[in-house]
Image (cartoon, rainbow over all chains, first blue to last red; front, side, top):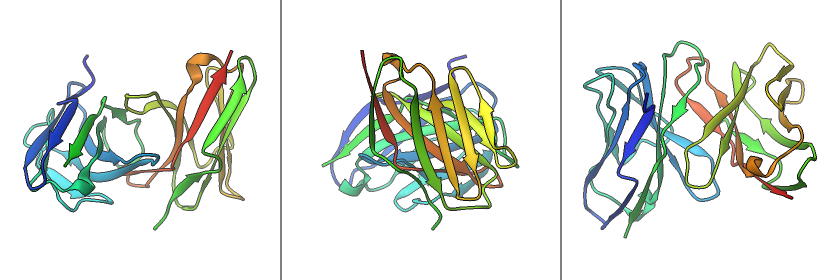
Length: 114
Length: 112
């Protein structure tokens, strides 16, 4: 198993540009999520999904869109990038919800918005 | 909102020492608490978790202690090695299992 994979590893955008961060998992996990990590900080939840076709907002959802058309993929879209979105983005997955299940994290995407 | 925090931003120890990393949490309704290790340029890696109905849980060279009276969580690493150098985060999981709330992290530096 490759686990949780993310692309790209690095990205530089100009203010106002749009882009999609890709996340995929091959563990047949129902739950997937996106976090952002700012310097010296812990991770904060952006959006999550408990299964295909179901998404919900986390702590910091503004400026980001998600969709979940398949179990494997959970892309994060920035419609109009802002410098405040400069951060490292992590995707995570777990087998399910209803209670705590161990979450597996991807290697991250480092995004810089100029 | 509710938050999880760590007491110290950095901890420096000698190889072979035991390390103790502390965390204070505020949401008494959280059901699980988790410790993660994050190496430079990588995603968080699960170390150990503990359910709120437990006081102590042991893994390989690691022990997590939970004191619900004072809302305190600690991670003990026995015989610390240079490979243990990383940032350590505590996190709490909401009861639905849909969100982790992370603390700010403690950077552990191990010198040989």
